[in-house]
Image (cartoon, rainbow, N blue to C red; front, side, top):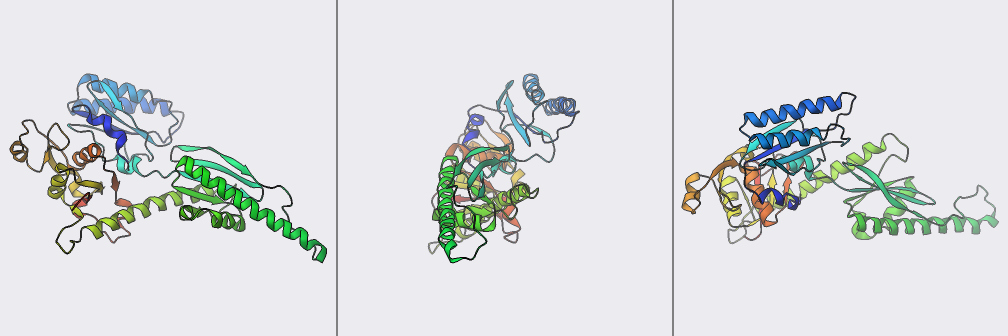
Length: 371
């Protein structure tokens, strides 16, 4: 997950209100229910010690979502009476929640907003294809391509005089497949799609798949159900889920390989809070790996005003010359450090089962920029 959009959260001092709210349910009572949720979450922040202005800003921002048709949910981060950031979520949170802490509670974003593959669904037939862009937030038209319109269909005759016509049909299919593949490649380049999902008859899907540029063939998935099938949406979601899992597996595999010492005894990866804190202070984290429900994720560390001021013990910060310090969750402190040094972060939860539970010790690890 590219964390650059979180920069505004670390341009201001805390404490912070962090709120996660589900907007996936839509009924006649939804506006009233969301108002009650806004009041309840603001009260929860007040009980945790949040100032009145920030509680009011959160309540008002949540009230504005009463009639929202957002399919998943939203996160809100507020301080000093102002909502600083309110990103939409790619998945609904398991429950609405509010947190008041020295740092923004950003770790849940890795699962709720992190991996949201952008898909181009290509609806293919013999005449051309229509393209549709899909994310967790919905779908939109992404263009179309029309190939040659004649001849498109074989005849049923076996007369030798029809063979020339049949060849023209084959040539038309070949030409249209190539045009569709070219247009689909252009659509992918423009949208930066992570997945290309091909929908249509077996032969048409396969023909387009084979004509995609080599570097895109691995991104293409042939949907087993065709246009109009009620199971097509399920095919798309399964492809998106598989993409997220496979990426997590690749990165976790890189981590497991990199933590093995080289002949000189150096490792390209670290795990556990003390080693990660040291790497963060030295700006060495290249990619942060987190399993959000793991024990080290909520382990307490100590932070200073600057992102590289963090330590396992409060006394360590004083040794480093930091006069002001606050307790914080390890995952949120490490994410702050990763944001300010341009490192991405990834939830390894989707890959844990596939690797037989081999995850970073305690659920936190990192690939390093240099050994």
